[in-house]
Image 1 (tube, rainbow, N blue to C red):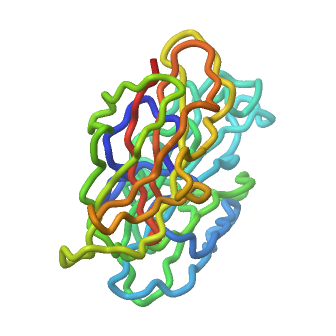
Image 2 (cartoon, rainbow, N blue to C red):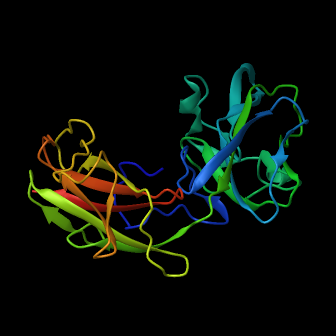
Image 3 (cartoon, one colour):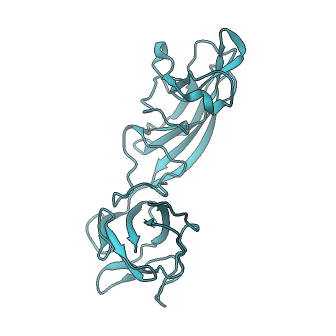
Length: 288
């Protein structure tokens, strides 16, 4: 899930197809199972059957020992799902990834294979977490490390299997005074009416969606924050961090009070709205 990002787009987007952005928490997806793929063996691991036609996201994370430098067998080389460390020998493992190269050039360009091919895991990620989207066929997925020599491998990779949740609503957007693009500017201590509209997939009003609100922030200057802002409503009709539906206007609203927030320096805030179908949407603003 996107948290404390450097900018806001108005909608939390994770990308599609292959080489997608990977997160430990996937908005719009439900974790189905977690697999451990042993890198020291050619034998892989099967997932549970993936429902035919359903969308899944496979997230690969971690790295393993993929061998040792030929001139000193005590110095390991590391590999993640696709890349190989070629950094200075010695030191902590995380120091070995500068620089790095795409590994297994002769074996499809990746170490972690799904079924019978090497997915396009995407560009190098410093947290060694990658993701690829697939469509279920009714059969299990097979994950395995494809390496020419397994005897000097140690450890393995984690593969998390997520299933896309069916979208039940059509997002119609945030409403003023919040503005798309994150240009909203509000006075500190004021109340911000956070409003949005949705419909069902046929365009009809929806009055029974459970929608919740969270707020996150990051620094835009040299100041230091005092923890993510507390979600507090200034309206008696609001409960906890849950939006309420206003039938007359066919919208959802939460009156977000900024009075309890404490800042030092210049801060920027991100509102994240989570709907009960698993979809999330975000927008940014600033306080002056």
